[in-house]
Length: 433
Image (cartoon, rainbow, N blue to C red):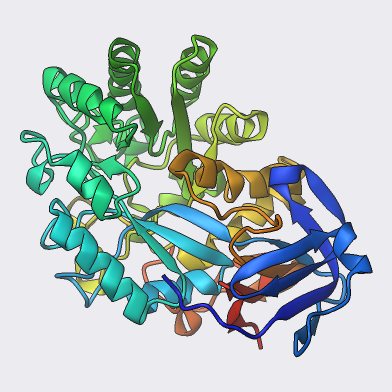
């Protein structure tokens, strides 16, 4: 947790967007002692606290800091890929004030002592909040269940098997039933490993490239199985990242039945499709794989209409040596923290999703699902705020990437929309210069 600063801070002349209140209006934000004292139009009539720092936003948007619910960090065990310091710096540059980390480190985060280690390392080295997810099974091997209750007490906010699916339905059912007793959230990678097997989306494109395909059914079948188990166990469930139109239909039907389910999608699957792979560009190799244009459009529509709840970066940094291989041998994964907001704003500028809804999927929705107090600009909430210009143009150049691993599919991409300031617990941790 980032240390709080006692010095008050006032953001004035801002366009306040607070999805938690469905608010989009001129206003101000007043912060002190790490919490929000007032935010919105009502803050305009209040004087600044004594000794406050005044920040003129000049009409820029002030919104809750983003919560990224799918972040892999190399620490511990693979610090050459990413550390908490480098990941948090990358996150702050994109307005992300909370990263929710995957347990797929070395060692795997499957013990309460390791959860405590993550929290202590983050407290000492990260400039944003770090909330760890713990492993659902020991070693992420999909067999033996971890101590969910003890891990939750230690600070784990959810439980996942990382980028691996749990193959055995009976084991998954038992875990869901056990997790229910602790009101714990299960976050699952929906891909049938027996059916997947390939390296890119199955179809004509894969055939033309001579690559083995991952059929859409690998995701759909696993998701359908999981939701039937959710109905049996009455557990809380989040599909980490879906990528097909049929998967969105499965989620919608499950919600209509009253299941306690949510779904996420990666920004990569909203802004890219399988054609972007081009000449075997391995920075576009990820899991789930990039799908066709019809699926991409379906994901955008599902995020806009509320079928999909949460937008994530799927930040999975890989070092150059594991990516600069022939396609089939290259590792899955792409850096994504520092481009999350800018890439998402493409959907706003194209009129696919309005700005309030877009921010909802990266603020209050993940906050509610994880039981966090952040993700909102309300009196008493943590003073985690971002200020951004939705129209400021910029180009992502490799030399400017703050992540230790430079494997971004957005390298040299042009964006409209830039974070100007990121504030965590009332302290400015990033300023664009």
